[in-house]
Length: 229
Image (cartoon, rainbow, N blue to C red; front, side, top):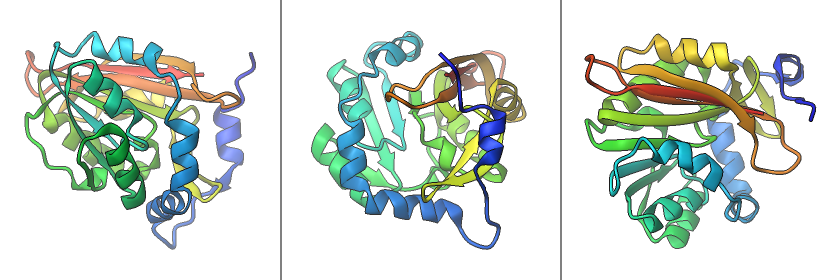
């Protein structure tokens, strides 16, 4: 199967504008399209992707669903017996997610999180990709500090290189090298693995994903990076 979301595709998209808050544009998009986005994503079977992540989270451990969207994954983790905390930047999506997963979903952005040593695992499925490239090192640092020792962060990005706007949203695209390099520059995290898999939504392109663990001391966390196609 041909992969269409490569570097050339990413750079062919609308270039990022520099004169406005494009991340705010993405939040506005989800506010406007919340019902549609919820309906299109809430029933996607993510079980094949859960397995790799949950193998590194202790039974009954505390998971942060970071940028939880519909609340689909938060509900799945809750049903599997994990303690779950969730947040979402779109107030309307947060409300829909709360109703779906039965958990209070806090409205906040990645740049606002300040947890310390709180989570055994952080699941950031297709959510960090809306954070501007220049802000990702700080955000990864915040996520690393939120992990307990030996905690694991799973993050995914559209496969490519650079920043772009598409359909009213802004994206930061990364490939294996870009994602691993970004995480390795963050003191709080260590790259454990990078891999590529396919987007779970039919007709979508490639995604690069990673698992990362906290790396302040030799005995603290590790990271995995996963790429999807």
